[in-house]
Length: 426
Image 1 (cartoon, rainbow, N blue to C red):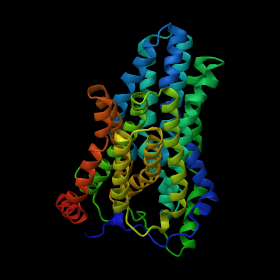
Image 2: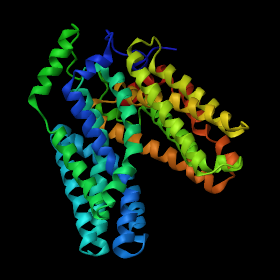
Image 3: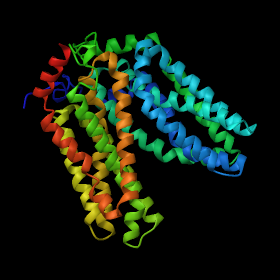
Image 4: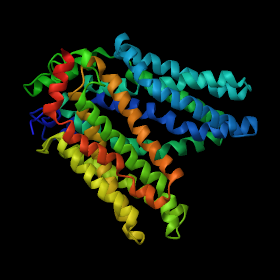
């Protein structure tokens, strides 16, 4: 199979990528900003339901705000990201985050003063659009924060920190709600405002990045070596290689949804309950964090391309999901969840890094936002299956989207992808 951009990560690679990242202050500002940006959507369901129950006497308003503002924003987010690219992502990303933060603060105030439902709806819509709309732009900003050769390791560390956000967000809501449910909503707005400040452009960062590139004797190209020569007209939807990575991302979301949504009903089949399900979820997250740290250290030394890595990880996650579906006994379930977790952070890093090599620079934010939507669709698909089929069949169907992605690895192989891209360019 002919080698493509995603199968040839840039060289030379650093011997100690993690140590180099630790010394990069701009990278840690980006990490802090991404963590703060991810906090509100994870806090929102819990915080809104708490506030709704406290101020209206019913959780209905909170549930309505979550359901009727989140889904439209996820669907519209790619178009919003494309607009952000045209306006200038470095300049407008922090401004949009700031606007979203103010809107989320408005939601908190709206509950306190018993504002009309339409006011809460509009403010929630603005806050969610700011959250989901800039996700791709924030990922794209990583290219202007660390040298290209460190992208894989940087994303792997980021994947580990995502686990901390997922675990910590509910506790933030609980602590804030001890004083008032409105404080939990206000904390969401404050997090977005803080992320905006951290992402505000600093001229010194460009100089530091240039020095880091020159230190290796291989400075970045003007387009950072990303999708060299691809015209903007190719975009993302006529880009077969990108579509493959979108399928991989959807399969990743489906695997996680199968494990997390199916944990409780699966242990119930063996006589377990919420405690056992929580332990399995913790095993999944802990294994993922451990694998992410190891991958961050060794990512630049692995001699196989990103596509092959994705295929191997998808096959392993398929085996792990089938173990969860068919094994008898507690320790078999623990082993299945652990194996799934060991693949999660590395695959998350691979599928987030690879599209950066096959998408035109001007469509980057849109592309990464589409990947976020694809992962959400995969996760939701797992929940939909649980509603329509038995737990056993839902788990057996966990690898379904992975099978489609693996088939696409053959159909959308690099040689065909380049031919399609050339035809689209004409």
